[in-house]
Length: 359
Ligand SMILES: [Zn+2]
Ligand SMILES: [Zn+2]
Image 1 (tube, helix red, strand yellow):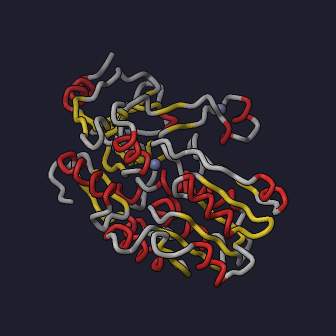
Image 2 (cartoon, protein in one colour):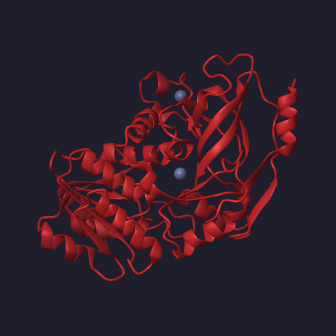
Image 3 (spheres, rainbow, N blue to C red):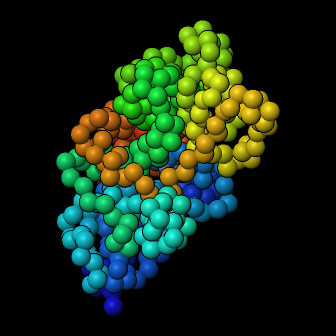
């Protein structure tokens, strides 16, 4: 039986769904009745992910729920829930392992296909009802920084899979928030050289991202619209780099093949939903040069506790990444600015409890 608290929130709550290009549809959230294993949380911060941008840009007719990088406060718990209590600050995982399937019980939760999800609710909303095992308690940082836990875990998963040799060379393709996080993590993981690519510093957004790349310790930045990635890297590292982390769209893997060394590893997680997801690969070249191509996909949620700790301890500086916060009113204009690169946005975070934040 839904509580009075629940009824009140269910009628007030709203969330964002992408529909018709950049028209953000705002509507009263279709809230399900909370189960005994469920927890009602009040969303305090939700990051804008590249995936959200893809949804509003490339899937115009699908009203996809927006937002999966969520930091929230617990409001009410179902009667079976003992792990969190009202007032707790939590990360909401977008997708959690089950803990009981063969993969989970073999210590390979990464391959769990029996997952718990946010059940179609937008993270860019005021309230959510989620199963208790999606929640990770945190302290020692504000909600805006805490919501970076999910994207940082995505970057961390790719960096860990890259198995960076101590003092080795790494190039990160793409200077979006995930690319910048990967570059920072590569340095933390012991890389001696880290290069990063972006389009052109002429765009305000790219300029800000290149500046943070330097701040994060990158040794070289490359503007792919003006410079050849191959020339720039070969000048510094003639035999090619040890590792490449691809956060940019699939076609940039072609650049990776030009600069990877014999026996190198390329990890990649840059998706494209607008039809540009196929590339032609020279398999002979891969075999003869013993190149490993390793996709990484941080679903179900893994590495959240480590990511959360890195943010809490300032090893990855969340305050430098989050340049813009906004409420419902500004959502469409912020998304548009991310698409056209017209504002110096590195990471934008929605604060759904505040209606009138300025871009
Ligand atoms: Zn994301
Ligand atoms: Zn499982």
